[in-house]
Length: 405
Image 1 (tube, rainbow, N blue to C red):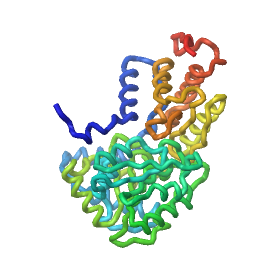
Image 2: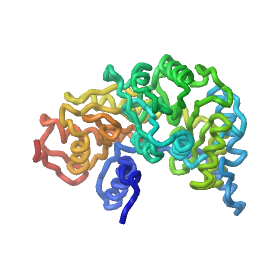
Image 3: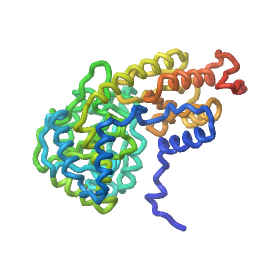
Image 4: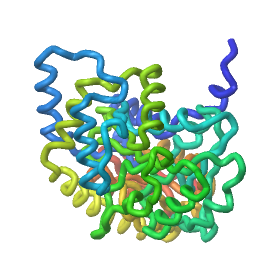
């Protein structure tokens, strides 16, 4: 049996694989702790649940338009005006089955085979694979200064004749770094001058801490015509803790959005009308859930970083947003996959290897769970790695003995 070269080149999503492994271990009754997760533990907003329930009770669960129902597009238009100070028309908006599908449709729309897409590193695990699925070439831009905060020079020096697009994800998964206004302004200006597509993956844009305000890419744009190559991706998964609802959207020029909707119509048709109704409820309902989530996440971040900083060999950078920290464990083990597997096997703590995000020696740790999981998870990791820790550890009634170096 033969499969395509593209299919052969695509790796399994490590985050989804970890979720599956966690579910299997949990179902066996193992005391596993998931510090690799990418979804808030708070419940979906009641406005979303009630909106979905009300529509479900009608029994009219039918096909939806390929680009989204009018009510959701109107809610997205209001959201864009309120949070981006940008008034758009329904033809500028496409709803999708998650921000990931919106991004995938955008890449299918703009990429020709062998054209390149640049994104700062560390990067979300799916960017390289998504670009490859479209026949393109992913190009990671590692900041020259070794930080998590790129400069425009880091993008400029990787642009060539085959460059088609730049993807910016801020606040960033996996680092939690929120890129500066200066950098966003420079990227918007550079892409306009070079006639390069700029895709803003804003899925975490309001999950930010320490009194920071979101950086609005539209504040620095000059081209608002139909020739604009700025595409903004967002969704309800992170802000509203609605990961399983799979509703995202894209905002762009009418020509781009029309092409994306055509592609989506052939791939999956429109998103589930029931889930779109839930998204409408979330976007139009009480917004206190977002501020409450931010408070919880900021507190969780502080607890996690305090525990990590007690390690002699771990180097951390304080996350500005999201619910991840990207910690350097290379003093203990430079092979992040080996380290991650060891932590699962020895102390049943799930983490994501840094190599999957383009940087070896690091682990992505999530703080979107409960304080108990964070505290116990880091205590287990420290016991596994720090030889000055007691030789024995109890997990429930089970006694572990550290028999490795």
